[in-house]
Length: 453
Image 1 (cartoon, helix red, strand yellow):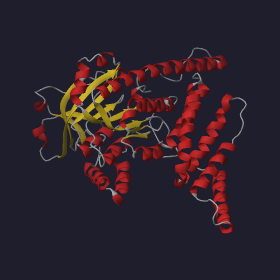
Image 2 (tube, helix red, strand yellow; image 1 turned 135 degrees about the vertical axis):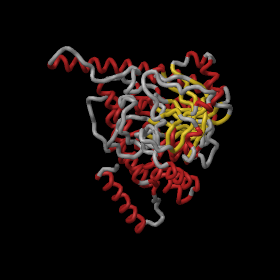
Image 3 (cartoon, rainbow, N blue to C red; image 1 turned 60 degrees about the vertical axis):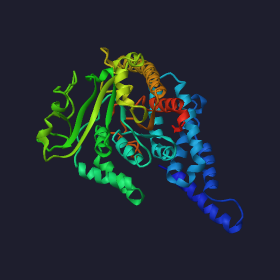
Image 4 (cartoon, rainbow, N blue to C red; image 1 turned 45 degrees about the horizontal axis):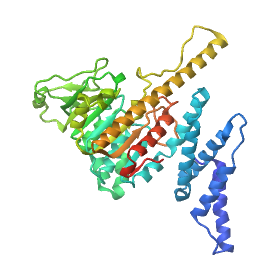
């Protein structure tokens, strides 16, 4: 959001241009000139902070100013866009050079807020590439991005890296399909359809359900880390259907399993938690019910990756579910660390001391956990890179990549940044996001990717 001072500066530039044109019709004017002037203004109207080396506060202030202008005046994007990108990369590199502490963690948190403000802009730019990378905070937005991109490319199976299955039930499948048809029609109806999908697929735990409903994915692969405690299996027949039921607490378009279609096998369950809104039923008992969507589902533990990269049974199951060619690579950043799971990071350390000493010990313990978590994230992301490189070598190339940050930011200044639930720890949301973008650019650089780095 542009501040009052920025607005007055922009207004002054516009008025100055009008006066310049009346006095000198041949002088250079236009959005490019105003954008260049705004860039100079943002770079100079910053405050010194002697407590920070390398002018860290200056970089944050200049970047925030330029993002406000970029979003407020779309005509500025051609001039300001490349500069904003370079400032993000420079600030990311500098923040990464500091050891994690409580203060640096808050700096990363602010950096994520700035990152989320340009999600929509970055998505718009990346859509023009052969391999787009589209990002939001809330995972529910992934479904409408898949629907929208299906107008331009063959998507292939869905490969979903996440701590959670995100297959919760939906309401009003007919209205969701109507909105999807408007999106596919393009033109003026596309925008209306995308807006309707925001309200129809609004739960962060429903993107897979929305994708199966609107896109008829033949295969869905949930790749999960060890702390998800899910049972593993490969290509089991499942289906969604609109089944009104008194026990359905979330929605009526639910995930179902018919053992008669699955060689009489029972539905596997989690070892520590129940399936979300999933029931075993016989298909013949669903006569008269609507919107049936059959597909094959695979649940594969891909972290640790030692067995997968060793081409064990998990690797074979992954290749069977994802044939050569394009696939949707969907990454929820909580795949690498989730605050609601035993994934290696928790806050609010408890101590037996009291008074000021207790507070200092709590801060010390918190910072120790931050440093440990950073090391875990680095190892896990390196492991993930090895997995997608191996898929690339076996000629499995994404058609589209979607990223969900899944962190807590209820008062974000943009829809793309808003998130009411925290899974990815907010201290690491920007750290993971930018590290992931650079990794994807490195792995798929030869395949026309625009990862925004």
